[in-house]
Length: 130
Image (tube, rainbow, N blue to C red; front, top):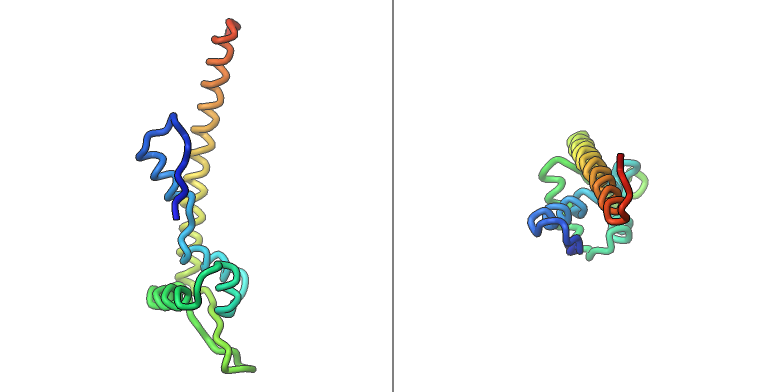
């Protein structure tokens, strides 16, 4: 769910794009969770606060996309676990790189905005910027 941003100096389209870029899909969250260790469905449900049926649908889609795989524990074949695949690791790496570029460009824009606002404040105070 995208949260509306209250930024009057940004166009509506840019606000929408920013909001979309700031939110993580459930698939991406699952990849983040599985990057360090395998997890049982109950653990994913607990971290994500989603219904079991929703997790089942999402993980089935992710398995079909080759992002994760499910397996049964050798000690207890009754328990199912999920693990990230090489394709999932690549997808997560690509996502992280994209977000880094996005954050870097926003930092540059923020720095420019801060300099501009500082200049405006000096002008309003009647101070010389030279």
